[in-house]
Length: 600
Image (tube, rainbow, N blue to C red; front, top):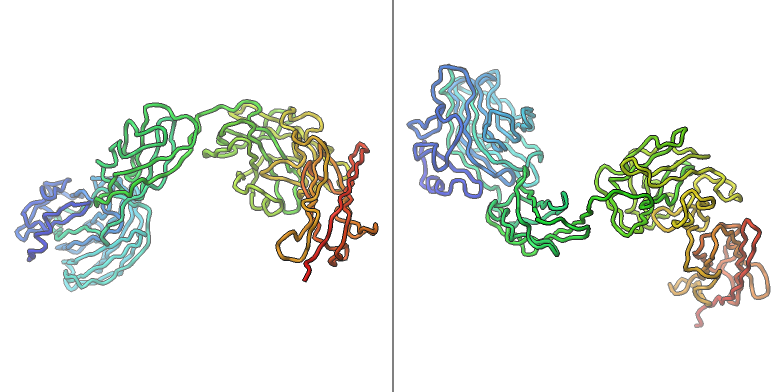
């Protein structure tokens, strides 16, 4: 076959950046580039083509050459089979392989030529270990000479994983599309090559030529640092957008972590875009930023300066009793609702919820039906409230969740009965908190406790102390998932008070003081309130709240309308705020305000 001067000149760049160019015009396959495998089973023939050698036995032989192109790649080659291919006499051209031995288990992709019958197709397969899956099934093609197959093949793959397979069965470059498919299972490889299975009589009938593996589109994009995470107290994993030149990837000076500097060692991993940074000293718990400079991809593109990724490391820690406390429970949900258990990090440090379990109790009061809160590391900041449930979306839809990211979706919760039961928190099966609950803990005046949570009053008192869990206030929607409990003690409140956000408001829709905000703060929880609005003549205008259980602090809003939904007249009004508790204690507050309007 004629070789053009241009193609010969291209041979000088063999294997550059993972590329392969070989037309065997140098008369060998052992250098420039060096193919490895069953070298005694191949030869370069008088036409400067790679051909299998005569064999007295049936076998499968292979040759491979290093090639790192697996995406944004184009493969071209010539193939000729001087016999009618079959399943016993077939060729595989491996475009991508992670192992040099193409006849053993590997991960990659290959073109297969050879099947029973006189009309063969050109098919693309994915191989995972020893399992092969066809991903492009080319149409069968008849041949004028049944005993000779000749074709030039081109395969392309984009960064997005789109494969396209083309052939010219005359051996030219007038390609026709055989098929396309998207597959991104394997994104990296180390080898390109051929594997020939034959019976003895077909042993020297395989011919290949004009191998070319190149970029589909010139790569001018530098690599980027995608993420960093701590694997243990001394090892950080850095993940890049693509494979790196090994020399730049393993240079310790190209990496620096805040307050730690460069690692003592950088190691490659089984994934060619992932590297491990090993430090001599253990990391303390904290937030870190990894900065990378100077690393290059296989094309030689250098990463932009100061590529960064942040991560958090938490030193291994065994929970102690009282570190995480039961804060709120909902075990009798609304219709179509779900149970939830709220927990509170009472410490001043990050805690990993992977070390926490949730349980109920058996007949003897011992932990039963234990569930892991999380199977992966899940960091809970100090002094935060997190909700454990099977369906966070339902909880968020039925209640206000001030911190929607502080939910843990569990596959299942232990069963918690509506009337009574036990909630237990464990760490390594050691009990760290326990609540025995019953429906009598709810506010006695509640008509229906469905959908009303029980909230913890004090984290300083024992969990099971009488009166330490009470019904969440109606004023907050009967539950406070992910934020401070409505009935929680507030030591900063020294006296009961009711105040107005502003003594004047004008509900005219101009966005300024359109509503009257009525703020309240009470030393003791468990209060109920009636809030009424009167005119300056003592006429009842609006019953704003009736026998409403309230939080220790909060507010109500009056929009200026009366009980008929009509806007009240301009003038002076009095807010009457009356509270009472189940012990009979009552208290009243009166605050005057002005409903105003603009003067034209």
